Image (cartoon, rainbow, N blue to C red; front, side):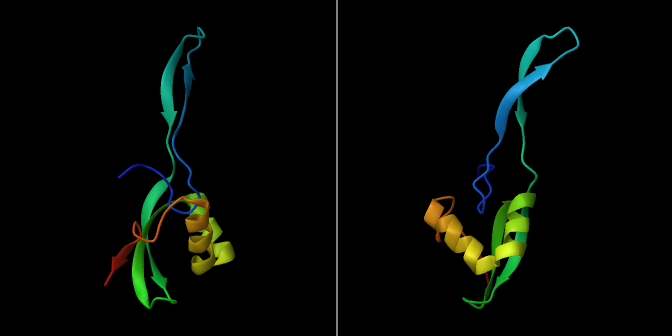
Length: 86
């Protein structure tokens, strides 16, 4: 599973480590990504999402149903990739 937020679509970025002598080596800026379980009231089930911290803030602001519908319409995830737990 790749490290992509299912709500915001954020991915890891690539940049440079810059030393004191200004030598540059490649590095990655990783996400604050974690798995979280939510109770999806519209479907009456628990779902598991791989989201970042800003995705969690989006869910708190809009609500789970609206955030999922926005993510699906923007192409960040599809309904098949959302894991249903029981």
